[in-house]
Length: 593
Image (cartoon, rainbow, N blue to C red; front, side):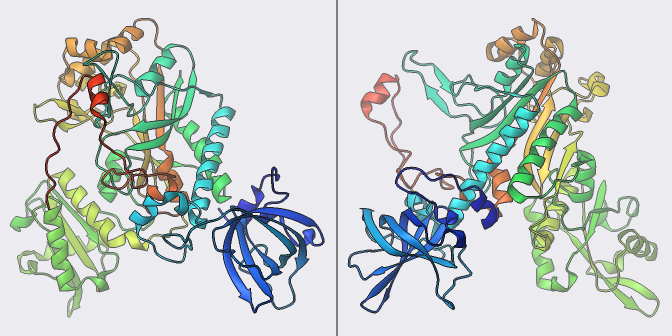
């Protein structure tokens, strides 16, 4: 969001102020105004004058007044003054208000401030732990002000789009029942029912399906969700998502609802029209990019060489799948760097990686490599043809089981090319036709690729028991710039199909009734066909704001260890609280040094 867009959001002044700083322009010259904010900088001009740069959330303006003792940065002030033209040659083009200043100032100090623990300038690097410990000060910085206001615009655009499409905002419970959605849940012990517990919702998944049974037809919520899982740059214990569900719809309808919301957000925040959002199948994404959330802003793709090496004598390439990519910047791949890539492939679970450097000799193009002597002339020729590699290129090859091969080479592709992308580009697209299941757990039970309420592709239902891993789901992910923004699916609305899925997943009839009886019972009374979607607002906002971590667009985030440095949470509870809950805390284990 540009400075001009932020100025467009300046509200009418109320209370102690007559104007926000951004509303004071050359058209205001001669007017008497009152501004409120913080002293951003104090500059003395001899012993006669001082210049105060005063800041509110809309900008900074210069105030000129007779020398006055005791004013310091971050004092909270109200200033009544006259708007004047700055003298020629003193304009500040870096400020939106840089052609005017305030004179004849009367300064009222509303609150003094002690020296700050760190400077608020965005130009200075500050340790993140210090920023989080004093987050209320960090939020005063221009970048945080900008990010949180972008987030507000994202939410407003989402709500506007949902209202336009006939959705009803409904709030679902925060105290909920345990569900098997894949992540560990936060548990809330009950005081009134000793030994019983609620959980905080990972998502409103079952609640919104019940709303469809209830005839709401089109539901949405900007929902708070919580998952007790390890944190990283794009993950927090608590996060916010747009959650929606609709009845009597198919997959394309849900995708269109979300595409409409994204177009509204992008237009409001970036001021551009979003092109039509295309789609790619899960299998195609994995085959071409080695990822189900591919980064497509650089063009390097994986190339299949399996047929070329189907009967090879090169033992390292004797595998079901052989994949290759032409390195995007071959001149940067020294021998030591190539050795690092081999180690990287092993680190990712592979057996290794082969490299071929394309050279020119007296007969034309050929390759050099530690294993070049084991290749036949026809294999070299076919590899050069399939990869379209030219002199100086380096071809990287991984041979393994299909899924392992594409994932390893896909990650190496990202390692080598991520820095080549254009950060201004927004590449939205759908990934469709995911598998319904993704392997087995330690007990041999199948695992849901999304969640157990996802409707199988109707063409594949007969394969549920004979070949379940080949069953496709009616699910779809929205990807932006190599990040999965969110997932959705058409839901199971028939009790017989839901019970069949539970059986395939190894969930007994008794367990299913205990955990999901309320949902299965609801299906008995006329559940409509329905589907839905949810995407992360934290992640979307961080991408639109150009930030690398969602912590930069959340007002009060946790650290990667889950600590709140500002409040000191989590903290021990008093013994009486544990007693009321019928619990006894385990003694803390000593911390390792």
